[in-house]
Image 1 (cartoon, rainbow, N blue to C red):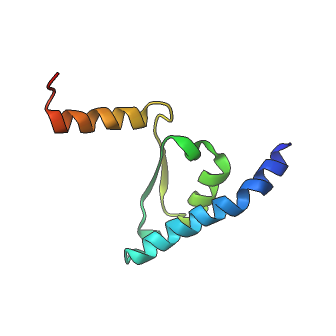
Image 2 (cartoon, rainbow, N blue to C red):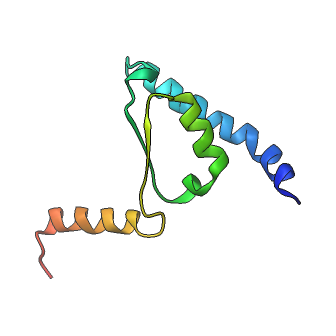
Length: 88
């Protein structure tokens, strides 16, 4: 399978993800132009096709990219620290 075939296969699912993001923003009563940042971290944000589509859906937003390999684990560590106050 080549890159064009992969893009074609993924496009319907990615379109649903972007539609869901737009719908979420609309349900929150926010305009797409009010979104100032898109934070991409981990998992599917490694798919350039997805991030490109999200950036196109929210053109006023600045794309911010986290550490795809460690940001989720870092967030879990911070949350655990808040919950347990550094208790071992």
